[in-house]
Amino acid sequence: MREIDLNADLGEGFGPWSMGDDAAMLDVVTSANIACGGHAGDPEVMHATLRAAAARGVMVGAHPGFEDREGFGRRVIPMTPDAITRMVAAQIGALSGVAALAGVPVRYVKAHGALANLAADRAEVAAAIAAAVAAQPGRLALLAISGTELEVQARKAGLPVVAEVFADRAYQADGRLVPRGLPGAVLHDADVAAARMLRFARTGLMPVLGGGEIALQAGSICVHGDTPDAVAMAQAVRAALEGAGITVRPFVTE
Image 1: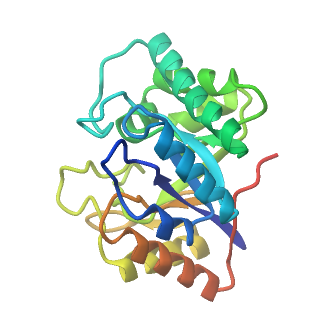
Image 2: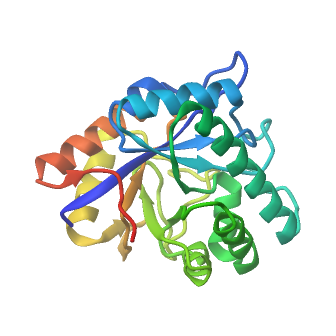
Image 3: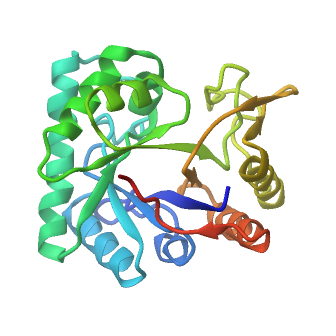
């Protein structure tokens, strides 16, 4: 691998409540997944995050999730596939509207939290998300967890697809993320995360919790922006990759 994108979920505050150090993360990452008012975010936070990303040359994407601020979008909200399509379309539209005011193009969509995890295995949920993205003006890409049903359904919908892996999350043997409630699911050591991402970039192999490795493909690495050590981890990952001669830059789709 000669180049890869580094993304983070940002703009996840709302009103007087803030989440993470977006400014510092935007100095490190190359793509920003901006909350659209569902699990987090509001027009003011969206606008500020969009402008801050643009000032640093960071590509931006919409980050829709279940409308569940109390649960930060990490709880499954029962919905029909059609309702999911409308929810995702509405959230993309919310960010796109604010982005138009800010003069910043939205390039892609990445589902958040429980919505993304549900779409990893359920074809009908994945297809619902893909349908919402495909209906948008222009040609938005879909950033999807590597090796999931969301990748499959996005390609069926004719969307540009970029797969991602996670620097700060542990993996199961089937390629899915270890549920957050289990021990070891979230990584906090920046050096450990950097070393595993460098090995992945060189070999395509991802360590599995409990031992062993699995093969994955990805054009982007995610560091979640809502953990206290997120900035240090992103800095360590980027430094390790660039130190090995790997270019860190926004992903490019056909």
